[in-house]
Image 1 (cartoon, rainbow, N blue to C red):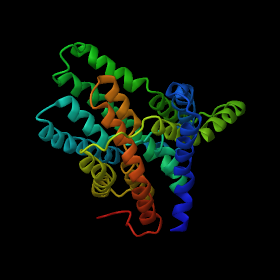
Image 2 (image 1 turned 90 degrees about the vertical axis):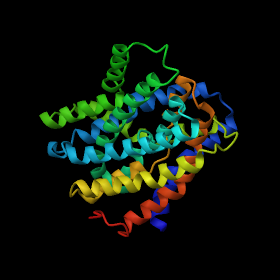
Image 3 (image 1 turned 45 degrees about the vertical axis):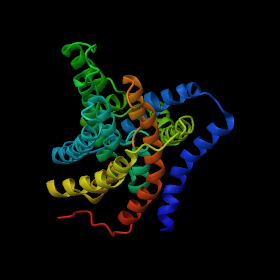
Length: 321
């Protein structure tokens, strides 16, 4: 257990430091803008490129793994969406945000850093694949469901909606970095030494900066009340989703243990801060979305630590079937 605590303590410690720094310095949330820009557009893309460019090509085309992880994410969204529809009397917009809070994990800020710490560089390919296809799923679901809601009457026409979805997918910096990294792996390309050194510096800064920024974000969106939906979303996000990912990935193929464990770990991560951003963009369920990000993050300290203990001590078999 001491080794697992030693693994997660620096990780969650960075979030705690960001939280404390924000509470002490009292900077406005707008001051975080350039840090987020650095993390999203520079540091994390450099990390993805660095690791994918050195990956054997055959590791990048495991479609059964992609299908299993993406299906598990969609199933969780659908489950929470149906529960929310029943509870809200059919309000699609609110139910969509609740579904995203239960299914859309913090796989951008938390995923790469924690998976690499826990499993080493062997985790980069499954993490990158999950990130690309889960984000594609979310980029499609959010605008589509909002267009179908009763608040979607003034939304752009279908062709503009489709173009916006494609633009969000194709030009997302993480996905662009993944495409370029895969291209470099396919053609055996390597950057010149000075460029590679720069990429190494940026990649090393990715996880610490991302986690610190996440702590700041949580501190500047205080919890005013606990939403009643917590009783559904927290256990579905932190317990049901990783279990479902475990079952499906084990069922569809015989994957290396690191791939199975990486799928479970990413599924077990708390709700992404982007859920709050989406809620704010559409003006739906905003305060409660912020609360769910905070509550699932706090809960994940216990659940992610327990999951890592089960995986690193060979208590959880890497193949269920």
